[in-house]
Image (cartoon, rainbow, N blue to C red; front, top):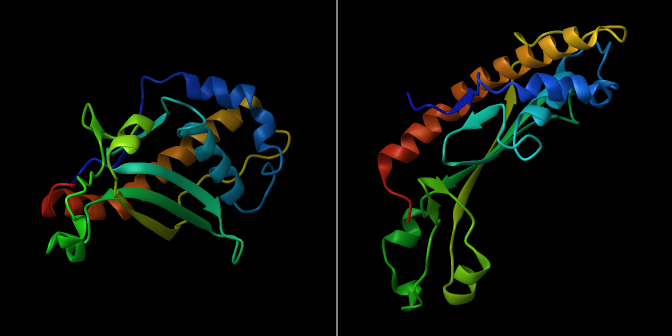
Length: 186
């Protein structure tokens, strides 16, 4: 299975950030559902809030968020992935009209946005996939009580992020495996 999401275990800034940003958790402390707490923990652990992040991800992942679903209060994953062009655009390239279309630029193996200079010279067509799916709440830690110590909040935040990394890897890993197996990004 392809390595999808993982924790930077050598990254000691996350705990310090959680301790310093305790106020970010204020509305979730004492909540009966773990959703808001877990969502806040994820936001603090992932780029762009913490860069480089405590959470790291596969080179095809452009962004990953875990948010509260306003419909049912559940936890929803929103993951944007770099994707190859659809078959309809690769079967016949007559639409290119010799314009020199470019796809996703890579820098040290990582997909990146084209620079302004690149866009001024060539047209770019970059395809993405948006994964939106519910995440299970079963293994998420309960939101700490309002009188919890900062250390308890940091430990619960780390546990929540660990569970989310596992669940997101289970959800998105097979998609990335297929994308990496099928064809190269153009």
